[in-house]
Length: 141
Length: 141
DNA sequence: GTGAAAGTTTAGCATTGGCTAAACTTTTGG
DNA sequence: CCAAAAGTTTAGCCAATGCTAAACTTTCAC
Ligand SMILES: [Mn+2]
Ligand SMILES: [Mn+2]
Ligand SMILES: [Mn+2]
Ligand SMILES: [Mn+2]
Image (cartoon, rainbow over all chains, first blue to last red; front, side, top):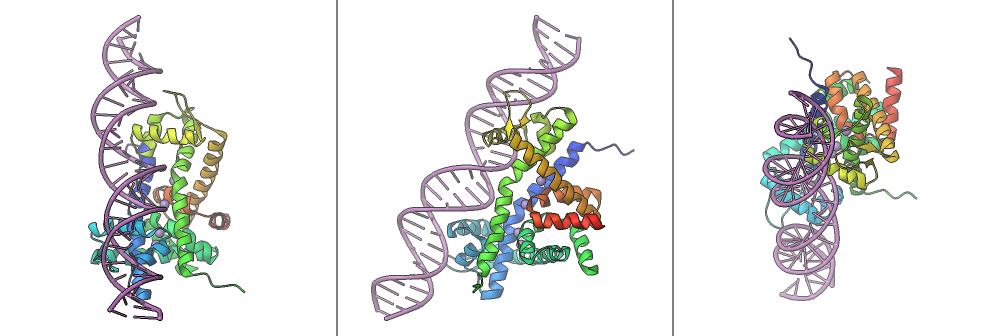
């Protein structure tokens, strides 16, 4: 017999998911961005990452150190940064998800600019089920 | 003559917006939740906030102090908490936005549970333009 | 009315993710 | 080839958001 789950448990689960999403967000965005830079320019340098992320060089350096401890990027001192296998996986998955969300917003009727901006935040909170629903919408629209 | 804006400037603007969204997120969620509790139970107590947010009592106490310094809530020691005029505004605006996003996801075809969970994160990254597009979609679907 | 339970606050700690300034290394132009 | 520019790293700072443990206050049950 299914006992009713307390509304607090349901609510807190949503907040917990959101906090978990946020805890991975920066790593995902960095990997995606590094992949983009390598694709566009052949390498990903700290300055370029900083410029596109909109943060200082020092912040980038510190974050890259964390990411390399987490096994997502590899770097040697004063050199451009590379993605590990794990890092590539995040980058590709992130790119796919990002594209679907952005195209979905466009299909919904917002401007290109708004789709770009809003998708940067939304992408991290879209579950597999919702992503599928967005892709389905795209396929028929 | 319109000079082309660098792709870095465009990209960093999106990340900046996302960071700004995150900096307001907790305040919005607290105000919305406090309003809900007052509506449901007549008052908002620390324990109930903690239970629904999925964090410890101590975390709630510390956060409430910040919010009261920001003029969003009012509290006296060992008593339940209340919203200021500003806090009510955030709560109502947040509720409206949250409802639109959740109903929109439902209309898109995801389960009630997924709509609840995903909307908790997504709501903070939906611009006025996108919110309007979602409302429009709801109106015709 | 009093003692235990429930709720709140405070203290102290950790991590993340920002910043500036200064030191250091690499690249580049002449 | 070498000085200046460009890029990177380190040090030290801060705020936000989480935690546990301990102290304190209020409420409840008897
Ligand atoms: Mn992305
Ligand atoms: Mn993003
Ligand atoms: Mn977010
Ligand atoms: Mn939320």
